[in-house]
Amino acid sequence: MERVNSACSKKIEMNIYSTISQNKWKTYLIMVLFVLFITTLTFVFAGALGENPLGLTGIALIFSGVMSLGSYYYSDKIVLATTGAHPVTEKENPNLYHTVENLAIGAGMPMPKLYIINDPSPNAFATGRDPKHAAVAVTTGIIEILSKAELEGVIAHELSHVKNFDTRLMAITAVLVGFVAILAELFMRNLWWGGSRRRDNENSDSRWQLILLVAGIILALLAPLVATLIQLAVSRKREFLADASGVLLTRYPEGLASALEKIAVDPRPVRSASNATAHLFIVNPFKQQTAKKWLTSLFNTHPPANERIKILRSM
Image 1 (cartoon, rainbow, N blue to C red):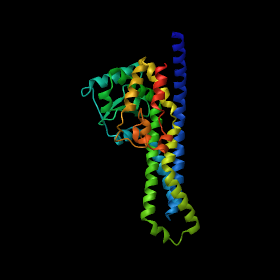
Image 2 (image 1 turned 120 degrees about the vertical axis):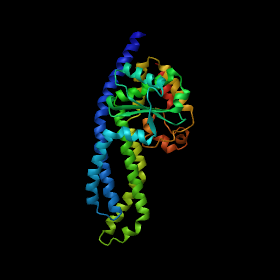
Image 3 (image 1 turned 120 degrees about the horizontal axis):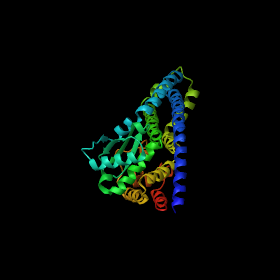
Image 4 (image 1 turned 30 degrees about the horizontal axis):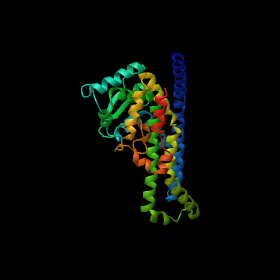
């Protein structure tokens, strides 16, 4: 039995090293694709609105490049701000602080910054570009309903995301996806309120502008779907690997399995969660609201909780 467990541990460790390498190059790939995607969107949207597409595209190219670099260094702060997380000290919550501290020591990584989200829905996430610049955030709801062993399982899972460099990829994706959604929303609003200015532009080629207009509307409508596909590019397999590597840290699969059960059955969604940040949480933060939307659930950024629980209890 010990040989089997040792073999499983070595296999998981090999997968972790492979994932870390993949996450690093995926981060840069997504940043480059984001710049190209934003530049294309701006060219189409500008032409559809009767503006100079080349001039605005140049500006968009520079701005999206700055956004990519900014998301690399500041994505964790942006995510924490949008979720309403506030820092917590050892004095304010010694039990939570010591749980995170002990597991961080066991994982051989620095103590991450600790945050709490004032929300009754049980959930948690980690963010940060590397283990030296990491943060773990938990809701007040998860602290209230989980036992010590269950909370350790959740924290170990989140620390595994940090150690595997999942958090860098996930946080950057959250910021960039959110920016794409904002750009599409701005175009639709401008299209609705500024249509007369577009028609009065005598210098524009009406046929070319009509093509760009149709393309712009299609792109704006598909932006949420594209955003979800970008999130899926991060791969849902990272959750399974974080579950497994978290268990290697705690040596107690049932703790995380029981925690996932409690989190998954709670019907309350996380109020501050958005489509851009949903993939960061340990369990889908929209809960039953998302389940009712078949298209959203089809592109769910999380694997089914019952599948993860089944795998954990088979360890």
